[in-house]
Image (tube, rainbow, N blue to C red; front, side, top):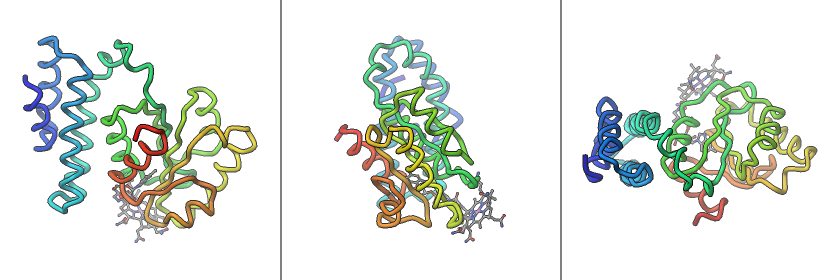
Amino acid sequence: MDFEKLTELVIELEVDDIADAVKEALNEGKDAFDILNSLTKGMDEVGRRYEEKEYYLTELVLAGETMKEAFNILKPALAASDRTEDKVKIIIGTVKGDNHDIGKNILGSLLLSSGFELYDLGMDVDENTIVEKVKETGAQIIALSSLLTMTVEQIKVVHEALQSAGLRDKIKFIVGGAPLNMELAKRLGADDFADDAVDGVRHIKRLSGME
Ligand code: B12
């Protein structure tokens, strides 16, 4: 299994074949990080095609699923390597009261494929859960999703809870979702906003000093 083939499988959204391909590459003794790099290359191309409107949301979701399948196989091998030590830790979730998670999941799989250490708290996440997770993991970044106008105020609640816990200065906070924009995000106490997941990863890399 060569690296070009792995890249191609992601670009071609081969969700049913990717797990076997990754297994084969690992069995051949290929380094898990090199495999991850080749998958990420594929995801970069998917992101480029999405921005050029050659791919649409369906493809982005499928690519996310493909990466997830690959990641399930790769995870133990990646964890065994000491290179995981310097990974940037990021907590993601959808705010309290909101049960939309498709966008968050796409962001999550893009972040995984970009080499972040991901803590996904799921949907309907309250501020205390987030504060506790920051304390537990020492994460450097929080990325939250809010799809409902009704729930955007939760961003402010999280911001204030982080302040009360004395953690706000230690962490970067980015948000996304259709009812938000940069101005509103900042007014609610977040540091940054991005209107899609591909751009979100770019912003997050900048926030974490990776770019
Ligand atoms: C699918 C869907 C649902 C599903 C959710 C399933 C799931 N597991 O997620 C179900 C059926 C459960 C649902 C329920 C409801 N929904 Co709904 N739902 C949608 C729908 C059709 C699609 C949302 C979606 O997944 N889009 C695809 C993803 C990929 O896009 P996205 O989430 O916007 O994410 C992208 C960006 O925003 C960004 N992004 C997202 N999060 C983040 C985070 C960060 C940090 C960054 C950087 C970027 C980022 O990146 C993503 C990809 O590029 C939208 C309408 C629409 N067309 O958007 C309505 C919509 C969001 N729902 C709506 C409503 C009102 C509801 C309900 C209240 C309906 C009801 N009366 O019961 C309930 C609420 C339940 C709850 N408590 O949350 C409204 C919200 C209106 C508003 N502004 O408040 C919408 C806009 C429909 C409408 N036009 O009225 N819904």
